[in-house]
Amino acid sequence: MNNVLFRLVALISGLLFGLGMVISGMADPVKVIGFLDVAGNWDPSLMFVMGGALFVFMPAYFLLIKSKTKPLNAETFCLSTNKKIDTKLLSGAAIFGLGWGIAGICPGPAVSSLGLGNGDVVYFLIAMMIGLGSTHFILNKKQ
Image 1: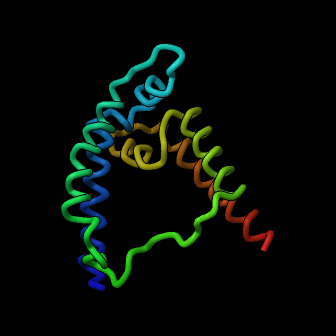
Image 2 (image 1 turned 180 degrees about the vertical axis):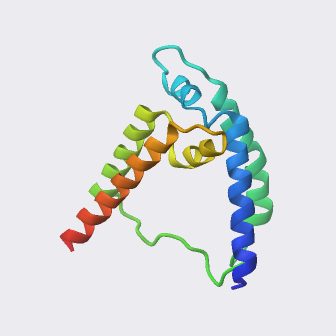
């Protein structure tokens, strides 16, 4: 694997992702909470962002990606071998969803939001790191 090319592609992908989050409004917690507030003052605009992303991604996936037997920059695809839905998966998804709903932002857009100068998101990122560290500690203690 070409490590420099891999890192360059990762950097460009991350920058493009972050720019997309900022431009689309997905890095704005007020906008995200407005989208999640289906029973109240619902703002459907992020639905068009997601639809636009699928409109761009789907043809590229079916024409360029799906037919590949191996990635361009690695020997094999990095895919999970876990095929079962267990308590760990469900509880992790529930905690992620609760955090997203309460804070109005998920980790990717939170990091992008730092680029906007949103200092308040630092508290979210600190809480997220504490949660990740706690989970890592608890799971490793059980083993």
